[in-house]
Amino acid sequence: MEAYRETRALDRPAALVRAAFEEDARFTADTDIDAGAGSTDAATSRWVARRGPYRTTAELDATTGELQVSVALPDEYAPGAVVLLVAVAAALALGAPAWTFLPALWGGAVLTLLPVGQLLVGPLPDTPGARTVDRGLTATTLAPYAATALALFGTLRGTLSPLLAAAPVTVLTAIGAGAYLLAGTDRRVTALDVPLSGLLAPLVAATNLLVGGALLRDARSPTLAVGLAGALALVLAALFVAYCHLALRRFRAARLAPVARRYRALAAAGYGALTLVLAGSVGLGSLAVVTGRPVPVVPSRAALRTALGGDPAVAGFTLLLVAPLAFLAVGWGAHLAGSVGGRLAAFARSEPLDAAARDTGDGVPDAFPVPVRVVSTDQPLVRPVAVAGLWRGVLVGRPVVETLAADELRAVVAHEAHHLDGRDLTAAAAAAAAAFGGLGFGGRNALLAFYDYAAAEQAADEHAARAVGPDATVRALRRLEALQARGAGAAVADGSGRIAPSTSRVRAVRSVLRAPYDLFFGRVLLDAAHRPVDERVRHLREEC
Image (cartoon, one colour):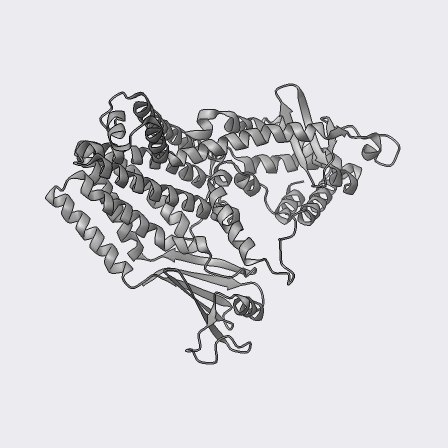
C-alpha cells in the first residue's frame, strides 16, 4: 500500500543522479521496465529498496528532469488501520471500560508513526541538486490517527465527563494533525510552526497523566494499567522525538514564509494562554503524584505504590509520563550552561583589537561604535555580547580580523552594534534564561518565533550600509560567506572518501536523539533569519 509520494526536480545532470543510486547499496535496479533500468543512456530508470517494512521505489525520467519517489507499506497496513478504526468506534458505542481502549491507543500511535518513519531512515541516497517540489502522505494514513483520537476519548471518558474528555482530545487532534501534516507534506512553513512543535511536549505529558489516572481509576489490575500506560508513554515519547527530527529537517531546508507582526502578536497571546494551561496542568499533576494529594484526573501515589512498589519506582514512572518535558528540561539546562559558559570562555580567550587592524591606510585608526575583542580561535566567529552591564561589545574570531579589510570589519561591527542597540539580544537571552519559559513554553525558539528576527537582520544590514557604505558591507558579507564555507569541516570518511556506514548510522541516531534540543534551543530560527547572501546583497543594492 502506497503511504507516501514525492516529486523531485533535478538541478544537475541525470547521469550524476543515476550514479548516486547505483553506488547506494540499499537500491537495486528494477529490470522490469523497458529501456534497461540503470543504464546511463536510458530515458527512464527505476530503483527499488527494501528496508524494514518499507519498500521505496525511485523512478528517474531524464526527459522531464524529474525523480518520482513512492514509499509503500505492507498490504496489511490499510485494512488493519480501517479495522482498528471500526473496532474503536464500536467499543465507544457499546460503552466499553477505559482500560480496553489503551491497546488501540498505542497501537494507533505506532501505525501513525509508520508512514512518516520512512523519512527518519532516509529513503533516498544523498543526491544534492534534486530538490523536493511536492510530497505528501496518502489518505489511508489518516485512519490510524483517527482511531488514536477516538481511543483516547474512550480512555478518558471513564474518568471525566464526555465534555471534559472531549476537550483534551480535540486539542490533541488539532495540534497533532498540524504536526502530522508538517512532517509529511510539503506545505510552506513559517516561524510560528516552531511553537506548534513546542506545544507537543506539555500536550503529550498531560495526555499521559490523564490516561494513567483514567486507567488506574477504572482498572481491575493496577499493575496491568501501569504497564499499558507505560507502553503508551514510550510510544508517544518516541513519536515526539521522531517528529522533532522531521520538523527540524523541514525548518533547516525551507525558507520560512514571513508572518505579519499583528498575527505574531495574536498568536503569541493564544500560545501563552494555551501553554500556561498545558504546562500548569502537567506541573500540578506531577506535584499530585509526588506529594500524594488526591487529584481525580491523574494517577494517585497510593495507586502507583500498589502497582510499582517503592518511591523510586513511582518517581521513575512519573518521569516516564512526562518524558517530553524532560527532554526540554535537559535541553534548557544544556543551552543555558553552554550559552553562558561559551561566552565566558570566548571572552577569556580574547584580547582587545589592536590599532593595526583598525587602520584604514591613512595611519588613523577607525573608531568602532562598541568595543571589539579578538578571540583566539580558527572559526570565523562574529558574536555580539551583552553581559548584564559588565561588558557590551562584539567578539570576532582571528580569521575574520586577518581576512577582512578595515572598512569591511567596521561594517560587520556596525551590523552587530545595531543588534545591541536595538535590544535584539534581549529576547534571545530572556527566552534562554527563563526556566519556565524554557520548559513549559517549548524552549527558546518557541519564544523567539514571535519576534521578527528576519526584519531585525535586515535592519542591521541597512544600518551597516548607511554607517560604512553599501560596497564595504557587500564585500564583508561575501568574505564572511567564504570564511564560513571554508570552516564548515569535512565529513569523516574511510580511505575511499565515502562516509563509513557505521559512522553514518551513529550520526543518524545522534541526530534523532538531539532533535528536541536542536529544534527548541538550537540556531534553527536564527539561521533562517539570515537570508542567503545573494538576497541580502540585492536588497542592499536596491535600498542603499
